[in-house]
Image 1 (cartoon, helix red, strand yellow):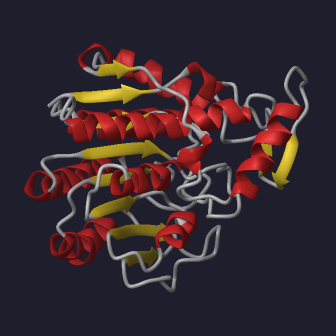
Image 2 (tube, one colour):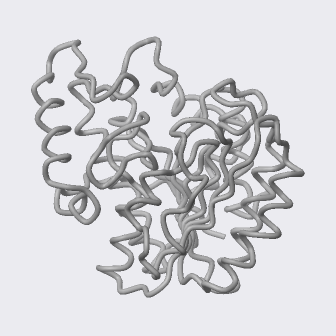
Length: 312
């Protein structure tokens, strides 16, 4: 397998305060663990371009994009922050970081569809799956996976794609953006009740979102994936798969109360790989979402990438 790794230093410059769990240290921990695990040199590390505003406009309103751009650029050269909500803030580098995050997802999509690589992991921030068509929220500025999915559909002409979201929080933004679009199937699990307190009722027939109780472990997740996700994915026959890869369902992550381990993330990745091999020529783009306990995050990401790269 040829697995590409996309990241950029600009993504570390987005800073929401030393108190904030969605910090630049997340990307540094991942990079350090890739080196310590001796797999960094086995990945195809690729350049990350800036997304264009026209790319963001595939899924976001012009007003939302302008709000992020103007308030971030107004802070350039200062140490100030602008709050979009209580937990989602901008600094003077946030606009550039957000364009890099979406740009990584777009570049990975182009490279996978072109056959240059088999799959890709994008170590990016800010994350994206809570960002709706009109609102940045939940640490997310723009919906990176949604931008890439719409690019695959509209620019590359794919007819069916699937989004797999295994973040511990419901990907409300992704669900809202693609509600009732039969070309896009979204499958997810998430702890419920938990922020953003949605998902217990699907917004459309193309969403297979499974709420689970706190303290659920890997056995619960494996059963729901086998019984609900896989039949839906098989019926949809996606030509490409996108992963919103959040690792905050790990038992060490105190942002929630679930009990997954690295082996569970590896198992989940294998299931997605099997679907991709059967229907999508192996085409997968995975983008980092949550995961805030650094040692659990870096180990889980490496477990995920090892499966993508057939190194496990």
